[in-house]
Length: 222
Image 1 (cartoon, rainbow, N blue to C red):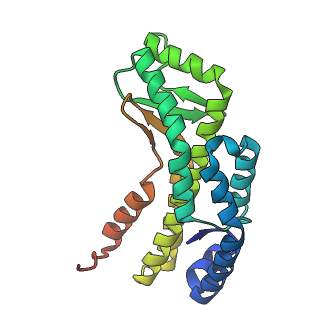
Image 2 (image 1 turned 180 degrees about the vertical axis):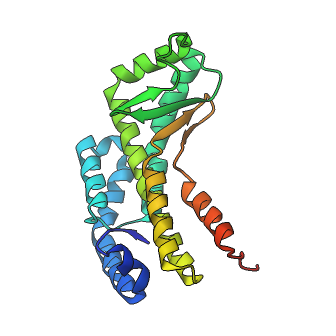
Image 3 (image 1 turned 90 degrees about the vertical axis):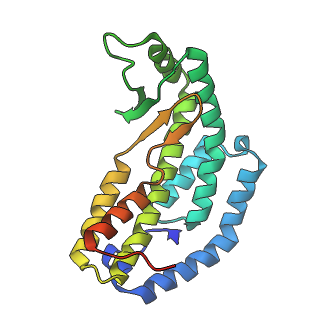
């Protein structure tokens, strides 16, 4: 599956041939262009500027870049490592013992509880660090958007599976709308000294599992 928006919602659902034609064109585009993008990734995270990453994200959002879900998944894993390492080191340095939520609110990453009147000093220190390190906030923005695009791509694939299972079109469209709203509204990380988790990761599968249960779709026999 490629992340692109050239087809309308109902085109995507109702015309498998058109979807396949778009996919074939996307594969050809990917063979010609995406290999270069991934080569840059392999060369090291410092080889791709913030503006280049932002431009790639913009093209994905506008349906002008045919990046496969696998490539998106690889990009998330690649960029997650240094961000996770930095934030986990900060959590250890500041003495943050419990899992901590970091949420994107009003264009800024907020450490949950850091701005309360009785905020723990370690949370306040982490918030102060985030406020001072705009580069880190930028990388968190980019990771969050990559994850949302990836999960949305999976959700579209899963919607096609629901349609194949004879779920009513209205229900499939509702599933897509609700899924997009849910995914694009998560915008949060969970931090501990042992890991950093993008909270949108895996949400497409959770939504699909809930939909299969709701519509009575049995799992295929192994």
